[in-house]
Amino acid sequence: MRKIVLMILFVMFMSSTAQAVYQLVWADEFDGSSINSQNWWHQVWGGAGNNNEMQYYTGRPENSFVSGGYLHIVAREEQYEEYNYTSARLTSDGLQDFLYGRLEARIKIPNGKGMWPAFWMMPTDWAYGGWAASGEIDILEAVNEMNYIRGSVHYGGVWPDNRNSFGDYREGRGPSATIFSDAFHTYAIEWEPTEFRWYVDGNLYYTRTNSGWWVDDAAWNEFAPFDKRFNFILNIAVGGDWPGAPDASTIFPQEMLVDWVRVYQHPNTDPSVSITSPSNGANLPAGNVTIEASASDSDGTIDRVWFFAGSTFIGEDSTAPYSISWGAVDGCYTLKATALDDLGGQAEGTIDITVGGGCPQLPFYGSPQAIPGQIEAEDFDLGPNGEAYYDADAGNNGGAYRPDTDVDMEACTDTGGGYNVGWISANEWMDYQVDVASAGTYTVQVRVASNATGGNFHIEFDGVDKTGNISVPITGGWQNWVTVSASADLSAGPQEMTFVNTGSATDEFNLNYYNVTGGGSPCTSSSMHVESIVPGTASGSRGNKRGKATVTINDDCGNPVAGADVTGTFTGDFSETVSGTTNGSGVVDLITTAQVKKPTFGFCVDDVTGSLPYASGDNVETCDNN
Image 1 (tube, rainbow, N blue to C red):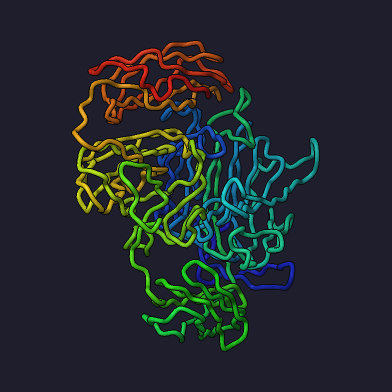
Image 2 (spheres, helix red, strand yellow; image 1 turned 30 degrees about the vertical axis):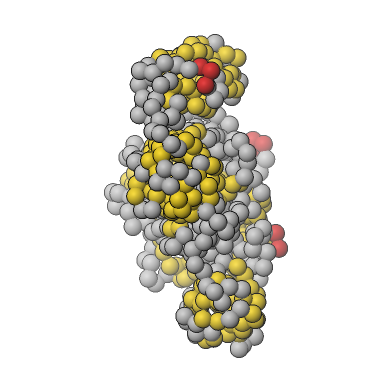
C-alpha cells in the first residue's frame, strides 16, 4: 500500500484540455482499527426497493470493518430481517462532500454471479429535485464476472423521466481478458464544470461533456445538475436488475477491499457576491424591479451572476455591473444572486423583500375547503415556509405541482392519480383552512404509503390535537397505498386543520389525501370490514419469493380494528390458505410458506373474526392480484 502525507503532497495530472495541478484536499487511508466516523456512516435498510436488490445493509462489524490498512465490505448469505443476504453501504453524506476535482479510490472488487460492487456519489443538497434530477455520479460499477468496469452519470428529470450516459472499460477479450477482481486497481474521475473523465489505473476510457447532460426543470443552467456538492458511497449490492440473482456458483462471503479514497482539487477561493439593490426588507410596488449585485473573485475572474426570485430563475449577467430586470407581482420573496468564478466556484447573496400586498397565509383555492369532504395533501395553504407549512429542507425535491414551495411533491399512482406529498421528515407540518359543516364526530381517513419504516402523525384543529397518534404501517413501496384513520370531535365553522408529523428522523412515508366523513352524533362501532389489500412479496431462499398480502381491517366508523383474525387464500403460483392477527393499526401481513422465483398470484380474504361482527358486504375489496 502507498501511504501519503496530506498537507504536502501535490500530484500532476494531464487533463483533456490543459495540464493542471491538483492538490490533495482530503483522504481516508483506512489505517487503524475502526471506520472513521468523521468520514463515513452506515445506511441501514433493505435493498429490495432499490433496483430489486436482495441484500439487507447493516451496520454490523460482520459486514464492514477496518483491518490491515483496508476497509472491508463483506456480503454474506444469511437470513436477516426477512432477507437472505447481508452487506454494507457506507456513505460520507453530511460528513464529507465535494464539488469538482479528481476523485479516486484503490479497490479490489469481489467476483461472483449476483455481485454488484460500486464506488459512487449522490447529491448532498438535492437542489434540482428527486432522483435523478439532482444527479448521480458512478465512478466504478461492475457485475458478476468482473471482466469490465462501467462509469456513468444520471440526470434529466425525476424518475421515470431520468436519463443516463455510460462508458465501459475492458482489457483484452476472451481468455486473455483482465478480471478486475483479481487485483487492486485505481478507479478515478476528473470532474470539471463542463466535463467528466473516467480512468482505470490512469487509462482514460470515457469522457462526457455538459452538452450531453441536463436537468429538465433547469434548462437555463448548462452545468446542472453537476454544479452542486456530492458525497461518496461504497457498497456491495447482491442481486438486482443488472447482475441478476446469485446462483450455485457464487461463493460467500464476498469481500470488497478499499485501500484508500482520495480527493484532489485545483486551489480555488470561492468568489463573493452581494445584492446591492433593492435593500434587504424593502417593500416595493408591483411592476418592473431592477436587481443589482456586486461580485468579485480574489484569485480569478467572475464568469457570470445568476438571479433568482425564490426558486425561480430570472436571468443572468456576465458583465459588471451585474443586474437584471424582473417583473414582480404581489408576494414575499427571497431574492438570490449566485456568482460563478472561472473554476466553477460559487457564492450566494440573498435578501428578503415584499412586493405589493405581500404574502398573507391564504386557502389554496381562495376559500376554506369543506368538511365533510376530501382534501388533497398537496393543496395546503398558500404562504411561506414557517407560516403555511414547515419543511425541513429547501426546495421541492419531487419538483411536481407546486415547484416554488419547499414541500416535496411527486406524481402519484394511487387510484385517481394526481400528486402526493413525499420525503416527509420529523416535525414537518402543513396547514389547511377548512370549514366544518356542523359540530359532531367525524372520521378522518388518510391515504399513506411507506416503503420500509412506517411513521406516525396526528391532525390538529385550531392548534388542538383531535385525532391522537395515527400510525403509518410499512406498505412495501412508496406507491403502495393504504388507508389509516381516526375519529375527531369537531366544532362547526371555519378553522385551521394542521397535519403534524410526529415520527422519528428515520421514519419516511408519503401522504396522498384526507377524506373526512361523518358529523352529527358520535359514531358507535358495530361491525368490521376489509379496508384494503396490498399484494407483494417477501424474500425466500436463494432468490425465491414468498407471496405476501398486507390486509387492513377497519370498523364501520373508519377506525382500525386490532386483534382481528384474518384468513385468506393465495392462488396462482401459490395455493395456500394463511391466517394472522391484526396489530394496533388494524394491519396484518399474510405470507406463504411456499416460494418461487418470479411469482404471479392472487389473494382473497376468506373470513375475519374478532370482537365485532364481520360485515363482508361492507368490504372495500375482497381480492387483489400481484
